[in-house]
Length: 151
Image 1: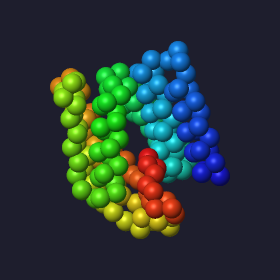
Image 2: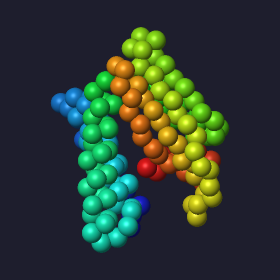
Image 3: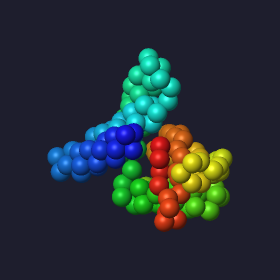
Image 4: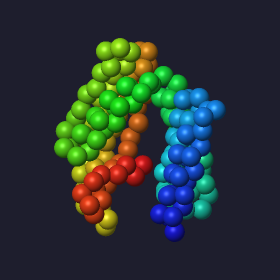
């Protein structure tokens, strides 16, 4: 059931994020808020679960808005490549856009076996206009060998 809710929420976020009338920061806020809320909803139970869901949505929305506000397409491409390399290779990655001077570091974290396959935690630090934003995530290997970010 949770997988169905997750897939539905991601589909809604991607659909809303692609709306022509939305700015990059609004797209980032929607996508980040949905993913943050989903991440928070998987923590605890009862009132703790509600609090974690709301906190995840607020934090994810804020982080997504900040990143969307300032990152251009090249920044995003370099960032995604660095995350992908870190998750697959298990080594820290760096990226820098010489045009915008935005840069980031993705640090490999704990690698572990989950019921669904192998997963790797990572931490990313993105510096935009001299301001660093830090986020944590987890990616898990799929049956076909590809990796998917799970939170």
